[in-house]
Image (cartoon, rainbow, N blue to C red):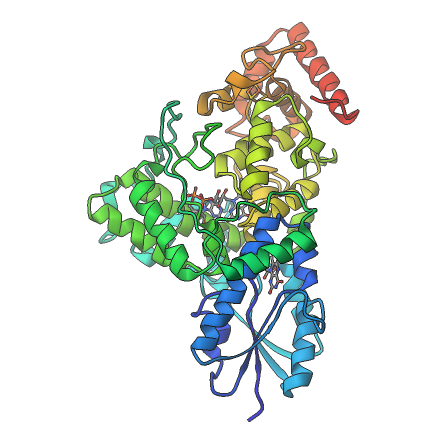
Length: 509
Ligand code: FAD
Ligand code: DLZ
Ligand code: SF4
């Protein structure tokens, strides 16, 4: 019988992949390819490209050992066709295959390319998720608002995680009330387990340095896990050393501690080295063993079976135009300090520096520092979306776009976020140590020294009054604003305008 091609993409490195399960090891040929089209559709952080290429090479070796016939193309192979479809066509000619089995990619762009390819491609559902597209559609159907919390409860019931019969463990679905403490300055922070580069990784690092060395981001030191075995060790390290305090300090930010008690496993889950359910089971086991408190276990499991599944559901429900939504009509260019240019804002400077160094920032840095600023300043959500897709090692469109366009920039009109995630400097000051070392003064509300978040917060609310004044969660902010005397309101708006004019003129702000 003629062989079929089995496509395995760089974020599909799971032996349980639906395309592999549907294939016949004795007959079919696995195609994996490092291609320029995927490596440059945005200017990915060099660490992200290195992670994907190194993990792809090692995954191919694992499959080969397991008896699969693999056709692997390295980026600098002379015959490399440069794109996924090009590589499939080349391998089809080589092997005589006329059919391809693929698992659905996590991006509309690539799904459409596969659908339009002159090949018979069978695209199977990606079943490495808890909810299928059909299940999410049924949940969403007829609901006025698609709130994550209700979807999450269904996922708890479906998986049985942290359930006691049909009741949530500890009698509450959500323990956030106990979470989100500001970090005292002396917390240790566990930090992720790191891995020294082996020969495969060193080869990839040399390639990435030569081809993508100009992209924003430091390639060295490269310390990510690149195999499932290493990723499992990183998970065990997190569960033992960081999970117990994960809930407490989930939203805290400290200049010297980029990771605090976060897991730093999203890149591994997203490329397939770890399975989301096994991760949650490890966390539940630690709670059952009495090693971690319920607020940490519940808070963590909610991020995975709640938020992660929910944002994927929204991405596929909303369709390919989701990334170009812009209900607030924001069109400012992304400021140069997102690419490392100088800024006087210490919070932004730290979040961007960490991003450049590690291809990582934790959720609150993404949401309440870089995201919050872009939203307040009215930056084009498409530009913001591209930035997040480029700079983080865990960024794949199905998860990045809803978090950025929806949750962070409110550009989808509130499908994901029930209110815009905006704050003045007071929130950042409460949750971090950034303000202490800042050229601006967080307590100052107007004038040259005023924290720009303080100025822009009111400017944002004022310019979007019609949209947000009746929102149950922002309405009281308008009452505060309206209670200020008129002179003060005018001064705040004038100072915000002149600060934005300096930003637009390219001054260091
Ligand atoms: P932890 O804080 O330790 O959380 C544990 C796990 O929960 C993560 O590994 C991740 O798998 C999952 N998780 C937590 N929050 C979310 C969420 N909102 N959506 C989906 N999964 C979540 N996450 C990505 O995986 N890829 C992205 O491209 C991405 N872009 C984001 C962009 C913005 C603007 C924002 C606000 C958030 C984004 N997130 C993204 C979500 C979240 O910030 C990251 O998942 C998290 O920071 C990863 O670090 P961690 O493994 O240390 O997470
Ligand atoms: C992100 C990425 C990169 C940088 N390079 C490759 C590659 O060379 N080959 C490949 O198969 N996949 C790569 N990927 C992951 C794809 O871009 C990803 O599958 C799609 O964005 C869908 O999530
Ligand atoms: Fe950021 Fe304002 Fe604090 Fe400076 S004072 S670190 S700009 S929040």
